[in-house]
Amino acid sequence: MVELNAALLAKPVRRNRLAAFVEQRWYSRPGWLWLLCPFEYLFRGIAYYRKKILTQRQTTSPLPVIVVGNISVGGTGKTPVIIALAQYLRDNGFKPGVISRGYGRTTTTLHCVGPSSTAANAGDEPLEIYQATRLPVIVSADRRQAVQYLAESGDCTIVLADDGLQHYTLPRALEIVVLDGDKMFGNGHCMPVGPLREPVSRLGSVDEVLVRGGNRSLLGASVFQFLTVGLTNVKSGEKKPLNFLCSLPPFYAVAGIGNPQKFYTSLNEVGQLHCAVEKPLRYTACSFPDHYTYSEHDFTFANHSPIVMTAKDAVKCQAFAQDNWWCLNIQADLPEPMLGRLLEKIRKVTTDVI
Image 1 (cartoon, rainbow, N blue to C red):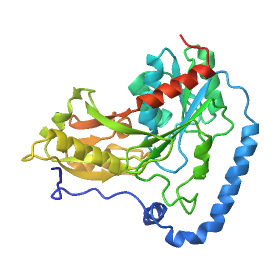
Image 2 (cartoon, rainbow, N blue to C red; image 1 turned 60 degrees about the vertical axis):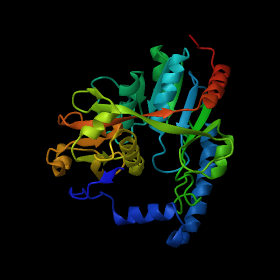
Image 3 (cartoon, rainbow, N blue to C red; image 1 turned 120 degrees about the horizontal axis):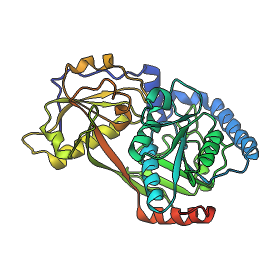
Image 4 (cartoon, rainbow, N blue to C red; image 1 turned 90 degrees about the horizontal axis):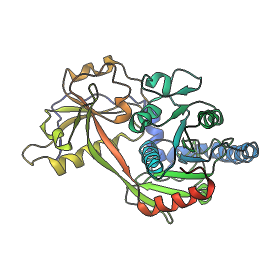
């Protein structure tokens, strides 16, 4: 059984009360947010006409683009899905590249992510994707410019767009939506009453819907899970098996992602599977805002205790990581029937197969 070590001083969650209240209402009954219903109708109307106008501005893409996005605010697990899809496409004879806006970076120009890139100039998720795949990853606010760059490089035959489902000026051959199986559509309302960027009916026009875990299903959707596969030292890159986690003294679990509870659940599952009953995992959960920009001063609370964090957090902490900082490696386990259907659809939209 995994225990939370209450004896350790917990790091307060860095979220303001208004954001916490709104999120609580988004994933339960709207409550006072009902007063914002007129703004929801306005939002829906703007989203409808925006899609209609921007779609008309689409031009021909030099490469087929697969958009992987969501219809709600917050993390749904897109980054591990992008990584899994990129590796699958490479294994099946394609030359995939990835484009992303690079949320949270401090620069605005087009950037080709490479070994010397940092989260500051590439964004945390694009850097995570590059380090996991070593494939071409291009960051640009203008996604069409990023696609053109990949096409001119000659090293790419198909493009995966990280997010961008609502970026309707970007031509796309296929659309994949990723949902959180626990949160799903929240209270079912669009912003600001609920978490949806577009109505649920939008799913009827996409090619594939992936639901990550959870207890709720959706007709026509494919369910996938995250697999926890090991640990990597944030500073040295050393790899360790999962049972290494059981040998750690009380540690801090750090998550700066859209849904940090998913990370803590993964830790608990590792403890239940790999740790002895008499020596359970002992950790203090430390949640930071999604895409948080870390500095070494943010970790003074740990007082040299071990830290275990997500891969998305690790890419932002490599420059000042200590020897006992570890990253929990998680992979998206995509269902074979969905991959088979997707591959068939991709072969129909491209002839650039090696």
